[in-house]
Image (cartoon, rainbow, N blue to C red; front, side):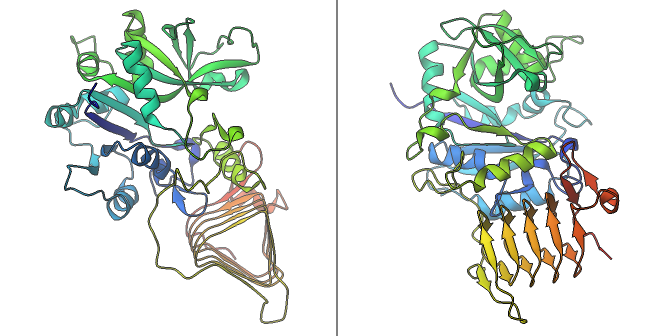
Length: 407
């Protein structure tokens, strides 16, 4: 069988309220991750490595930095008709924004009509994982499904945040529950539920039909809330077990790794996952690279301070252009163009590009957004009283918003 013509639609239009203040000035998929990347780079890299190279990214809220990142970074050769294109809300159906993921596709059906694909991959933009999408497409074709939903087990206590799947032994979805208050457990494992990853492969006509309103009272706005339940009822929905996906060069213990980074704690934890000596999720797989913009910066530098203080860096990521000059960095992500001065201590923290940490400052379990200057001797993450001026996650991670002036 000839390789099907595939159009990729990446949904990048959500507000990202649970990631505030990191999303105060940018879209959630544009939030830096792992020091050298943006969150959207992971889904786009999966498609680039899978050689699915016709991609549109639907954007909406605070999309300038996301649009700029895509335009500067994601350029394929146009000789063979390949592209990555950000598409803002165009209001083709009337003067309204996208009212949900299904409505976003309905308002952009012209993109599907122009490309005339056999299949449409609809993926979210704000998850961290490696995936060979070809294997999911093949499972979709083998099942002769109208839609295939990527699925993964999640802890039962977290399952109410996801679409939950009940499937037969043949993979056919028998019931789909969008964010249920009391999610059903997986058969044989009461501690977990089978969750949708928000990644879908559709037959083109199936997708067009299901997102097109059938009447005034039949307006599907959300894929999880309306589209998948409707196709489940019609017997056209199947699930794809993500744990079976095999990525070239991936270590066995990494298989099935997927993180939804929609909350501050989930975002923080996923960054911390990168720092183990043998990480659950590796950025160093040369057979399945994560692509991003190559910045014209010098190598990272670890040196003495002007006063002769010795630097110490342990279990951390240091990105290009960063300088540790006599400071101590432990279990932290240090982005590009960061400066850490003598006797400063950065522990279990994430520093965004352009951060300056003054002499003797102390940072613990915090996320510091771009271009924040930490004064000498300043402390963050050590005293709940003084940290009250900042945002704190549910588990106590302190977040300092972009460009904050500290005194």
